[in-house]
Image 1: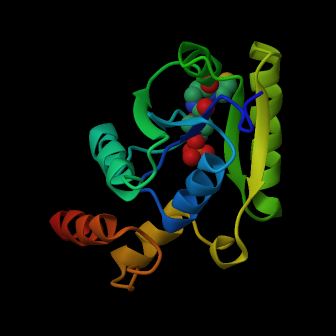
Image 2: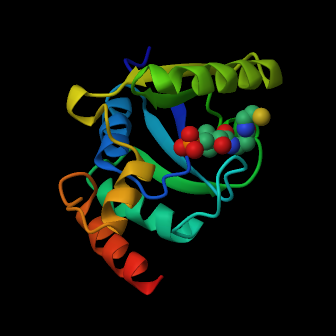
Length: 166
Ligand code: PNS
């Protein structure tokens, strides 16, 4: 029997990916055979994204290039359908503080109702990333704060350019 656990999907908006996301993806890649990072095309509950889905996907691909069992796809359908399309029986998401819990609790229950055969699994954020969010990074960068140790280098550069353009 495999010591690992087949295919898993790691979904998110990733607008943009942070070092906290990369930490969760890396740790997940240590326990699953294949990790499919799912970049949602248009997040329903959020405003327009700063980066296109293709840009968000490219940032993750670059930052995970050293992880051979990680791939990145864009999806625009239900998460459980995306998981089934990839023959994944698990969804992994990161969990930071208590503030994440209510939203993730709802998502896990909705996804379980849609497909009870797909398990939602939560990986607790590493302490040094427990405060980190894409929204916080965008806010810091907007006001000229240094985000270089919070996001991959390509994201830090692109944030500067994109926010200058606005
Ligand atoms: O990084 P986020 O914004 O927390 O990611 C949200 C995501 C992509 C996990 C969520 O928006 C999602 O699953 N979207 C696809 C539609 C769906 O299946 N929604 C949940 C059940 S209704």
